[in-house]
Amino acid sequence: MVSGEGVTRTGETIKSGSGNKLPIREPELKREYYFRALVLSHLLNTIRESLEDSGFLQSEVDVFTTELAKLDEDDQFSVLSIPFELRGRVFEKYHEDIEDRRTSVANAVRDICQKNKKYGFTVGYHLSDHHIPKANNGAWDIKGNEFDDRDNRWMAYYSEDYLNRYKKKSGKYLYVVRAEISPDSSHKRDLSNKWGRASLLSIIDECDMREIEQGINEAIKNEDAAPQREAA
Image (cartoon, rainbow, N blue to C red; front, side):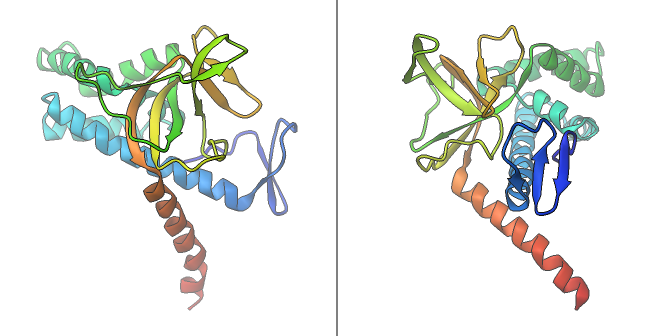
């Protein structure tokens, strides 16, 4: 799941190939790996439901997820970065095109990927200690509530990965948001700690962070126990 590009294994640590970051210890890299896997699994379940709600047949949903699985992980997250408020309309339009034989399910996946990558769309992670409800008009977003002197405006923040998540206070709710990493985007990025910020963040999905952490712990426990079972 997690790419090994730019990463060098050195004893008990994993070092960034850039050489300008502190070494990442092996257990932390494991947690990142399983975090991404769990979030990806959660988003795939959400996408399946959205496709079904948009009129896709079960066989078409299966083709969609099969084609999605052929992409590398970064491209999968790019496809899955469609915000909640847009997802229904986007999938309904593709379903109409598929029904009218203007495109295929496989081409729809490739088209979504190409368009989202063009604008640098991917996923980011915003932790909150309170539930953020959907608006009556279908919007689901996070408005900036912290004033940022660099931008002279109120901003909302997200991390680009698990290791750089906001740790100063626990967040029960993990909001997967659309991150924008294109140089032309209105989102601002802090590459030193892999954070992004914008005045408004569009929510893709919501997870229970405690369940995610529990899933990570269980996955690592099972992985560590595997050699012992094989030896027995």
